Length: 219
View 1 (cartoon, rainbow, N blue to C red):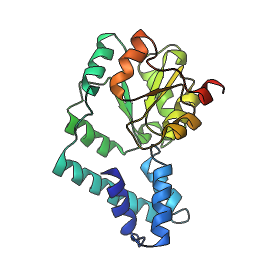
View 2 (view 1 turned 90 degrees about the vertical axis):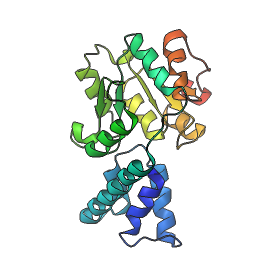
View 3 (view 1 turned 45 degrees about the horizontal axis):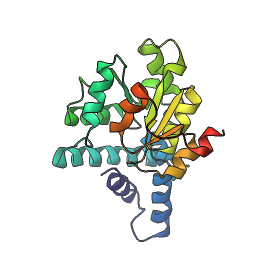
View 4 (view 1 turned 180 degrees about the vertical axis):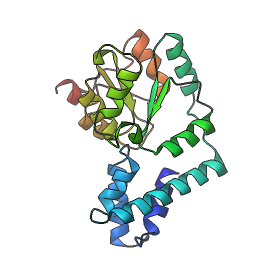
Protein backbone atom coordinates (compact mmCIF):
# COMPACT_ATOMS: atom_id res chain seq x y z
CA UNK A 1 0.00 0.00 0.00
CA UNK A 2 2.82 2.38 0.85
CA UNK A 3 4.76 1.63 -2.34
CA UNK A 4 1.62 2.13 -4.42
CA UNK A 5 0.92 5.46 -2.73
CA UNK A 6 4.47 6.63 -3.49
CA UNK A 7 4.09 5.55 -7.13
CA UNK A 8 0.78 7.40 -7.50
CA UNK A 9 2.26 10.50 -5.89
CA UNK A 10 5.26 10.77 -8.20
CA UNK A 11 3.05 10.01 -11.23
CA UNK A 12 1.04 13.16 -10.52
CA UNK A 13 4.30 15.09 -10.92
CA UNK A 14 5.01 13.68 -14.37
CA UNK A 15 7.19 10.72 -13.41
CA UNK A 16 5.27 7.78 -14.84
CA UNK A 17 5.83 4.00 -14.96
CA UNK A 18 7.95 2.73 -17.83
CA UNK A 19 10.44 5.60 -17.74
CA UNK A 20 13.98 5.73 -16.41
CA UNK A 21 13.03 8.59 -14.13
CA UNK A 22 10.27 6.47 -12.57
CA UNK A 23 12.65 3.54 -11.98
CA UNK A 24 15.21 5.82 -10.32
CA UNK A 25 12.53 7.46 -8.18
CA UNK A 26 11.21 4.11 -6.92
CA UNK A 27 14.74 2.95 -6.11
CA UNK A 28 15.11 6.12 -4.03
CA UNK A 29 11.77 5.40 -2.33
CA UNK A 30 12.88 1.89 -1.37
CA UNK A 31 16.27 3.03 -0.08
CA UNK A 32 14.67 5.84 1.94
CA UNK A 33 11.90 3.84 3.60
CA UNK A 34 11.55 4.73 7.25
CA UNK A 35 12.48 8.36 6.64
CA UNK A 36 9.98 11.21 6.74
CA UNK A 37 7.79 11.00 3.64
CA UNK A 38 8.33 14.65 2.79
CA UNK A 39 12.09 14.08 2.95
CA UNK A 40 11.70 11.17 0.53
CA UNK A 41 9.97 13.46 -1.96
CA UNK A 42 12.56 16.19 -1.41
CA UNK A 43 15.13 13.63 -2.48
CA UNK A 44 13.18 12.95 -5.68
CA UNK A 45 12.53 16.65 -6.39
CA UNK A 46 15.61 18.29 -4.83
CA UNK A 47 15.20 21.63 -6.57
CA UNK A 48 11.45 22.07 -6.27
CA UNK A 49 9.94 22.29 -2.78
CA UNK A 50 6.45 22.98 -4.17
CA UNK A 51 6.60 19.80 -6.24
CA UNK A 52 7.79 17.78 -3.26
CA UNK A 53 4.96 19.16 -1.10
CA UNK A 54 2.38 18.43 -3.80
CA UNK A 55 3.62 14.86 -4.17
CA UNK A 56 3.57 14.40 -0.40
CA UNK A 57 -0.04 15.59 -0.22
CA UNK A 58 -1.02 13.11 -2.95
CA UNK A 59 0.80 10.35 -1.08
CA UNK A 60 -1.14 11.05 2.10
CA UNK A 61 -4.48 11.08 0.28
CA UNK A 62 -3.63 7.86 -1.58
CA UNK A 63 -2.44 5.97 1.48
CA UNK A 64 -5.28 7.14 3.70
CA UNK A 65 -7.74 6.17 0.95
CA UNK A 66 -6.21 2.70 0.82
CA UNK A 67 -6.62 2.38 4.58
CA UNK A 68 -10.26 3.40 4.31
CA UNK A 69 -10.88 0.79 1.60
CA UNK A 70 -8.87 -2.15 2.87
CA UNK A 71 -8.13 -1.43 6.53
CA UNK A 72 -4.95 -2.50 8.35
CA UNK A 73 -4.29 -5.80 10.08
CA UNK A 74 -1.46 -6.37 12.59
CA UNK A 75 0.94 -9.22 11.89
CA UNK A 76 0.26 -12.35 13.96
CA UNK A 77 1.36 -12.03 17.57
CA UNK A 78 2.09 -8.30 17.50
CA UNK A 79 -0.88 -7.19 19.64
CA UNK A 80 -0.05 -9.88 22.19
CA UNK A 81 3.57 -8.69 22.22
CA UNK A 82 2.53 -5.12 22.95
CA UNK A 83 0.31 -6.33 25.79
CA UNK A 84 3.18 -8.38 27.27
CA UNK A 85 5.53 -5.41 27.17
CA UNK A 86 3.07 -3.04 28.80
CA UNK A 87 2.25 -5.73 31.35
CA UNK A 88 5.95 -5.75 32.23
CA UNK A 89 5.83 -1.96 32.76
CA UNK A 90 7.76 -1.24 29.57
CA UNK A 91 6.61 2.00 28.00
CA UNK A 92 5.98 1.95 24.26
CA UNK A 93 6.38 4.77 21.75
CA UNK A 94 5.34 4.29 18.13
CA UNK A 95 7.42 6.41 15.72
CA UNK A 96 6.74 6.94 12.04
CA UNK A 97 7.77 8.93 8.98
CA UNK A 98 4.11 9.67 8.21
CA UNK A 99 2.44 12.99 8.93
CA UNK A 100 0.47 13.51 12.12
CA UNK A 101 -2.83 13.16 10.24
CA UNK A 102 -1.81 9.88 8.60
CA UNK A 103 -0.44 8.56 11.90
CA UNK A 104 -3.81 9.27 13.50
CA UNK A 105 -5.61 7.31 10.80
CA UNK A 106 -3.22 4.37 11.18
CA UNK A 107 -3.79 4.25 14.94
CA UNK A 108 -7.54 4.50 14.45
CA UNK A 109 -7.61 1.75 11.81
CA UNK A 110 -5.59 -0.58 14.07
CA UNK A 111 -7.43 0.40 17.24
CA UNK A 112 -4.08 0.91 18.94
CA UNK A 113 -4.70 4.14 20.84
CA UNK A 114 -4.65 2.16 24.10
CA UNK A 115 -1.75 -0.09 23.05
CA UNK A 116 1.00 2.55 23.08
CA UNK A 117 1.98 5.23 25.57
CA UNK A 118 3.11 7.73 22.96
CA UNK A 119 3.09 8.13 19.18
CA UNK A 120 5.48 10.53 17.43
CA UNK A 121 6.01 11.72 13.88
CA UNK A 122 8.57 14.16 12.42
CA UNK A 123 6.15 17.08 12.88
CA UNK A 124 6.41 16.55 16.64
CA UNK A 125 10.19 17.08 16.63
CA UNK A 126 10.64 20.05 14.33
CA UNK A 127 10.46 17.98 11.15
CA UNK A 128 13.62 15.99 11.94
CA UNK A 129 12.64 12.42 11.15
CA UNK A 130 14.78 9.30 10.81
CA UNK A 131 17.64 8.56 10.54
CA UNK A 132 18.15 11.48 12.95
CA UNK A 133 17.62 10.46 16.61
CA UNK A 134 15.16 13.21 17.55
CA UNK A 135 12.00 11.10 17.82
CA UNK A 136 13.68 8.54 20.08
CA UNK A 137 15.22 11.22 22.28
CA UNK A 138 11.89 13.05 22.49
CA UNK A 139 10.24 9.80 23.60
CA UNK A 140 12.93 9.42 26.27
CA UNK A 141 12.10 12.84 27.67
CA UNK A 142 8.31 12.60 27.42
CA UNK A 143 8.13 9.12 28.95
CA UNK A 144 10.52 9.96 31.76
CA UNK A 145 13.26 7.50 30.83
CA UNK A 146 16.38 8.28 32.87
CA UNK A 147 19.01 6.59 30.70
CA UNK A 148 19.08 6.05 26.91
CA UNK A 149 20.68 2.66 27.60
CA UNK A 150 17.27 1.60 28.90
CA UNK A 151 15.83 2.14 25.41
CA UNK A 152 15.22 -0.46 22.71
CA UNK A 153 14.57 0.72 19.16
CA UNK A 154 12.82 -1.72 16.83
CA UNK A 155 12.20 -1.22 13.12
CA UNK A 156 12.32 -2.74 9.64
CA UNK A 157 14.47 -0.20 7.79
CA UNK A 158 18.09 0.86 7.71
CA UNK A 159 17.08 4.36 8.82
CA UNK A 160 15.43 2.85 11.93
CA UNK A 161 18.72 1.18 12.82
CA UNK A 162 20.72 4.37 12.25
CA UNK A 163 18.24 6.31 14.36
CA UNK A 164 18.54 3.85 17.25
CA UNK A 165 22.33 3.81 17.18
CA UNK A 166 22.54 7.60 17.04
CA UNK A 167 20.13 7.88 19.99
CA UNK A 168 22.32 5.59 22.10
CA UNK A 169 19.80 2.76 22.55
CA UNK A 170 21.31 -0.44 23.96
CA UNK A 171 19.08 -2.63 21.78
CA UNK A 172 18.56 -1.78 18.12
CA UNK A 173 16.53 -4.65 16.69
CA UNK A 174 15.91 -5.13 12.98
CA UNK A 175 12.67 -6.88 12.03
CA UNK A 176 12.79 -9.11 8.96
CA UNK A 177 9.13 -8.77 7.98
CA UNK A 178 9.61 -5.32 6.47
CA UNK A 179 11.12 -3.40 3.61
CA UNK A 180 14.88 -3.86 4.04
CA UNK A 181 17.02 -6.98 3.93
CA UNK A 182 19.02 -8.45 6.79
CA UNK A 183 22.16 -7.03 5.20
CA UNK A 184 20.71 -3.50 5.10
CA UNK A 185 19.61 -3.75 8.73
CA UNK A 186 23.05 -4.91 9.83
CA UNK A 187 24.65 -2.13 7.78
CA UNK A 188 22.47 0.36 9.66
CA UNK A 189 23.74 -0.95 13.00
CA UNK A 190 21.27 -3.62 14.17
CA UNK A 191 22.36 -5.28 17.41
CA UNK A 192 19.74 -8.03 17.00
CA UNK A 193 17.53 -9.44 14.24
CA UNK A 194 13.95 -10.58 14.82
CA UNK A 195 11.71 -12.63 12.57
CA UNK A 196 8.75 -10.59 13.82
CA UNK A 197 7.81 -7.90 16.33
CA UNK A 198 6.05 -10.78 18.07
CA UNK A 199 9.53 -11.93 19.20
CA UNK A 200 10.30 -8.66 20.97
CA UNK A 201 9.11 -9.68 24.47
CA UNK A 202 11.45 -12.69 24.37
CA UNK A 203 14.36 -10.41 23.53
CA UNK A 204 13.63 -7.78 26.17
CA UNK A 205 12.21 -9.90 28.98
CA UNK A 206 14.09 -13.22 28.83
CA UNK A 207 17.17 -12.57 26.72
CA UNK A 208 18.00 -12.50 23.02
CA UNK A 209 16.27 -15.17 20.88
CA UNK A 210 19.06 -14.88 18.29
CA UNK A 211 22.76 -14.09 18.37
CA UNK A 212 23.67 -10.48 17.52
CA UNK A 213 24.65 -10.04 13.86
CA UNK A 214 28.38 -10.49 13.42
CA UNK A 215 28.85 -7.26 11.46
CA UNK A 216 26.97 -5.24 14.05
CA UNK A 217 28.68 -6.87 17.02
CA UNK A 218 32.05 -5.84 15.64
CA UNK A 219 31.16 -2.17 15.25
